[in-house]
Image 1: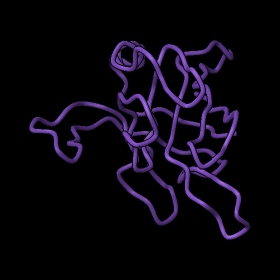
Image 2: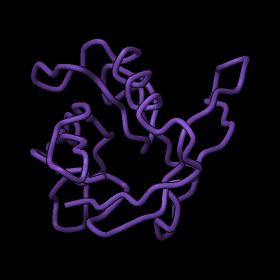
Image 3: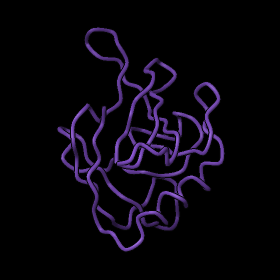
Image 4: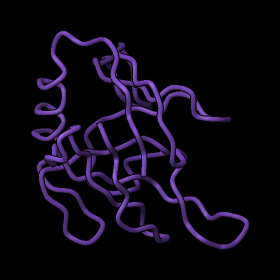
Length: 130
């Protein structure tokens, strides 16, 4: 899969999650962090990463859920794909939605369910961030 970033501001990092054939799976939103040069970026820099299926639990959630973790990110662990609508729902994770208006995702739970159903039977996949 490909995570194609579209914009980075203090309001978040927007993008699109694409299948290898460039068909959009979901819109994405990540929390933005200010860099030394005063630009804004997400925790996951451009590159290729292995994503591993597992049970995870977000802060404040009672029950764990199945998702994929982006591994191999320098200085960071626990970067997950999960539902959420604004960058405040992410501390570095990749939020998924069927639509995006500015820096707000829509239908996040539906987009996450679609993402997971497309990976049924797989325990790992490669993610290229551009």
